Length: 117
Image (tube, rainbow, N blue to C red):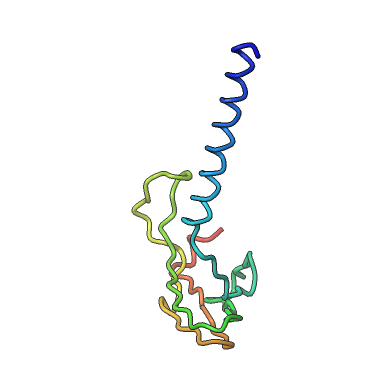
């Protein structure tokens, strides 16, 4: 057997072993994923004549969930520094406890009427 064929077989074996070790370690390290809260939409339209809108949150799991809501200040571009302009909306309440099988409401309140387009 020529030396280069043996090198290829050994390299291929080491590659397979490295891949197997990586796969096993990935499965051992992977965290558990849980999804239990359903948001009543993905996009929300804020009518100009309303001061607030309500968003329905539903807990579909068998566990209680504590939801922390926050609206960040606007940025000029993704990853940019936050401006000194206050956020045009306020989320209320900032903390919501959803027990299994219950629903809750998150309200978005307008802070200033002339900031939104």
